[in-house]
Length: 142
Image 1 (spheres, rainbow, N blue to C red):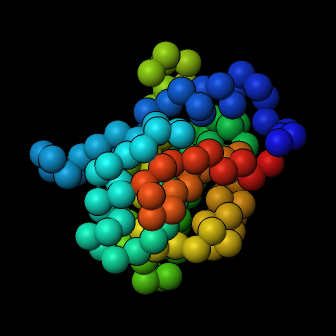
Image 2 (cartoon, rainbow, N blue to C red):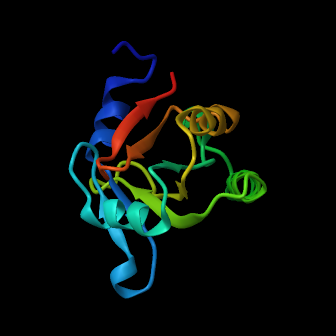
């Protein structure tokens, strides 16, 4: 698939840790293209068949201030709440340390179309998408 995203940035996305925050065993880490049993179990337990892992931080991977990023993330959270969807907080982390970790939401039960709409609304290059099998895939938006 052709993309306007820099290949080095794509590599960072491919190798990042996508951490879902929670207490004790409720926390887990997802990796693109690798089955994630805790995600699959969470989707089954909550009765949904899809999820996305999305952030509002640093649209188009251009640095924004902490305040701008926090406001955008609060708006994303509010949008998800207004859709009536469950979510868990998380963080996308580059294990190589080239990019700072960014707060994210794991949104449960969202349709692919609405996930793309959210990602585009907040200027994201990509997000994680998963169906009931719990296999996170990189969904490119540019």
